[in-house]
Image: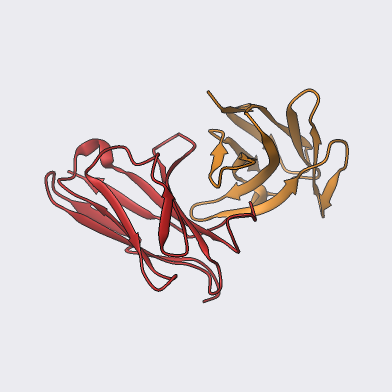
Length: 114
Length: 111
């Protein structure tokens, strides 16, 4: 595609529900990244994929967070049993490869947990 | 702990002013520094700086890196209302794929 695409753009959920956030990277980009941006804060690294494998999961805040990537393309970030502190914008980025530091970002999913 | 600090956190100017945004960093195994512009949606890439003292320029925007003093500046001349955004500074480290971001500088350009 022309750019990184994320869906949904907005998600409102009730505390305790599970949510899935989707990211479609730029075609041909082998590296994919998830970040979280809380209000007024910088971007916080969550997880990174090279191809379909995730060598670095160190940023996932708890075991309620998981992510997968299939076909070296689409990635899904799943948050189980959502809590109010999970409310944030979740941004996805992709780059040509893990050796190329220039990351291109999607517009994000704004998650609100009531 | 690796950290990237941006200043000021917010700035309000009038159209036509020149602004300088600052980014300092303390990271292990520095590789490169990147600037992004974030309006309401996706951060968009502006510059990547790897070498000290070499200015990168794009129209009214320019940036330079000082690896000895561990900082970078982003200059915007003749500001326009369309420059209003949050400007993010990020550092890439060797051996790590993630970017370490600062909190950003919110620039507001009033007509």
